[in-house]
Image (cartoon, rainbow, N blue to C red; front, side):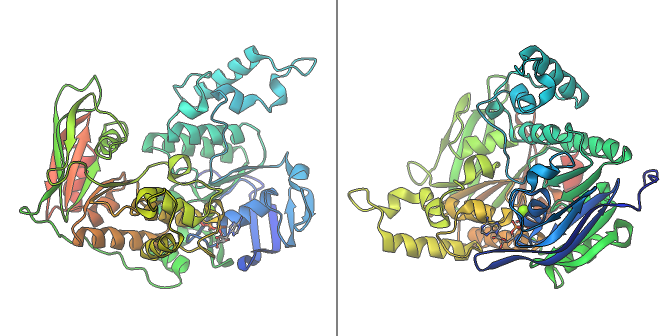
Length: 499
Ligand SMILES: Nc1ncnc2c1ncn2[C@@H]1O[C@H](COP(=O)(O)OP(=O)(O)OP(=O)(O)O)[C@@H](O)[C@H]1O
Ligand SMILES: [Mg+2]
């Protein structure tokens, strides 16, 4: 526990009886929520519980239908339009969906709106902007160039930039909505250090995450939401444990499923990689295959090559050398769940139906290239049921869905062409404990039906629950393999590089 702040009992945020509906969805059903000065307050709940909606009404991004909000010395009727401007100086909100401009540079994204880089006549000084950016990047230990385009950075660096941009504003209340979803372990540590430093200076955080272990690492207090209501509020984190939080989130006991093995060494090979070199620096060949019925995990440190190998297997990245083939047919049908769903997983303004159908335009169209509407409706309907997508209709825009349901849409899209092999990167990122189990059941079901499944994951629990074979990828090479009845201990030691 950190040192106590003098004013720590004083509230900085008070939300009273906040209501919000979207059409027939009652996203917030009269929520009370309090944040004290200098605390990290975790907000947890299942996909669709109303977390993002609650913090969006708090920051004024999405005004509520009713209720009052007090932040610092300002009290607002929450149904008022555009109160965001009146609280700009006291609250910053890092949204769940990235908001950076991909065609602007790092420095422009960070400072273009900031008055501190403008000269006497209001003109932006690019020298001042570069200097401030370098200072900030140095403070965060980030090795990226200030004049790279944001769109060229990896998902983790982009997410950190977003957070840096908000934190540097120096406001007393910060909202972080799933800030670590795209971060590596090292990046996550950088973020936690900054959060702790700011907290010690009296800044309050509302922290949303599906990683309950993070809650225990950074949060002081926890509020749990379910179906638009608060079910537990302002509970000290020390009085809770992971099981209790999960049960309160779900409203029922959660069972953790165990891995099932459909592997058969005589089953046909669906995908074969021979003599693969990931890039020109690789100096050892990778040989790898996927058989029908197996779930293989690619594990290892970020940047060690597991993501690149998966993208090569999925035909999305060209290896420096080597071939990918499918012994049975000329080109294997592969479904891909990409790692960064906001960038390449879905098109937000389109509806669920269109997003899923993009995955199989060829099989859903007739001879003239026109989509057969009836066939599409039935096919997409089946896939969204299989993946448990919860939406008001197949026409609802995907940007309006909760994060977990967006990920299920990405799964439905990947399955649209009836793939032989499914390659899924970070398959349950941003997904609640219940939906996670649904996706695990889906992957096992696919394997039992003879698909080959390749999963890339950083989560040891996830790998242990799913994978019948674990391939450790390190330094662009396959370093080790676990098959069949391995234990959690075997896995952890190899993933941490001890063995
Ligand atoms: N703009 C919108 N239009 C229509 N419905 C919406 C909109 N935003 C949210 N909803 C609905 O409101 C409910 C609450 O969604 P919200 O995004 O707040 O959930 P969440 O707790 O943040 O979930 P997740 O953990 O998956 O991000 C969901 O049923 C969602 O579909
Ligand atoms: Mg959300």
